Length: 483
Picture 1 (spheres, rainbow, N blue to C red):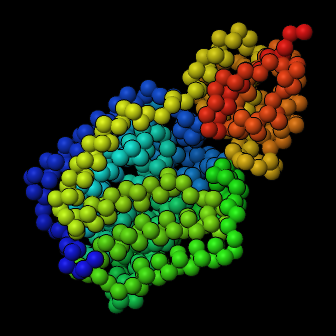
Picture 2 (cartoon, rainbow, N blue to C red; picture 1 turned 30 degrees about the vertical axis):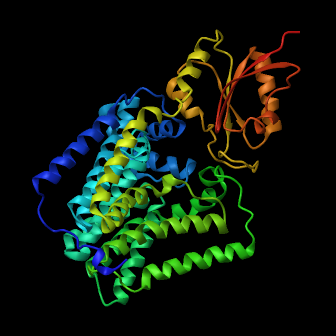
Picture 3 (cartoon, helix red, strand yellow; picture 1 turned 90 degrees about the vertical axis):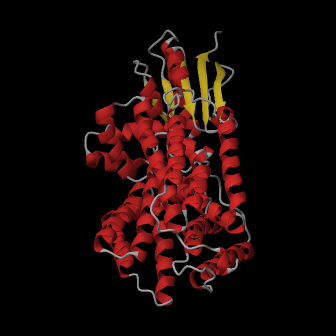
């Protein structure tokens, strides 16, 4: 792209027209994010957020993800704890915090587009992001991703401003936001790494960016006390629930792995040390591209070399920032087409939203069925262990991954029985014994329909009815067969 095609960022004050359009987009986003917010039951991960938030204090909250869900860090749960102390633990209250951060992210996409480019680019990026299905889904679930997006975008915005207009106050604010990223999700470390790499590019080109380096060092210093805990979690990340559910390792040849590493290294070197092609000395296009591409390549290459680790959720901030890059790239070609594409994309998203609703989670219905089954002595079985395709003994989720969401909706006396998900023969023995004694029971499994057969009771002596099946959830009604 020729240097003249990239315009300089606008430093002008808000004019009334862009602000009015942005306000309309923000209000429309708020309506969509809040519409029927409590209709659907919580998913298992969202119920886990609620469970973590109910812990009695900060220390107990910190221990929850450290012990049971590596990679999902502590800051969101701590904030949700104090939020729900005020607003309660209903589905609406739990999701409202995500709505707030979702709307903050819309504001930050606009601010980032304006900081790096101009009002029109910022508006186009806002329209693309605000009604994007991912943005809507993130804003309506009680998980850390909207907060992660907002913190990461705010940190990038502050870092760009500190580079351009250095100040100690700005550096401290930027450093605090930088530390907040990995305390919210471990993928924030990759973002810090990409920013550090681009500051290294500045340094090699004679630009010191002293306050920006202060911000980065402050972020690392604030995260350092947590680093030993994060290091201990790495094994679980590689072989436990957090990544193993993505599937077994890819069988790439050594040559393919080397080629992937070489391509990623080449792209990284070009981003860091390639010839400047932009008119503006801040290189907004290159910075934004590196901020998005470097963490993405890290996940992809890590998946090829080690183990599947790529999930779009982990790149949620990069996806949001990608709307700014998309708007800028199209605008460099044609401002008219940028505006038309942004408006058209937003319209398509709005039309598709009523049809894009995912299947409701089954937990309310399961609670109702257990309540009306007529015998409170019949147990409900859950599998201990990480949600994993392997049968390696592990200490993950000793209470059963799905027991948290079940207990959110069901408060009856039926016994909750935990069976080892990694030992199907032991699980089957326990299930058969207790179902025979109680005259019935329920099994809630994260295994697929074929794998779970190894722990289902003997079909010659028990009646097995599959009540619900979708990916990673199977619910079975188990009763002894009358002789």
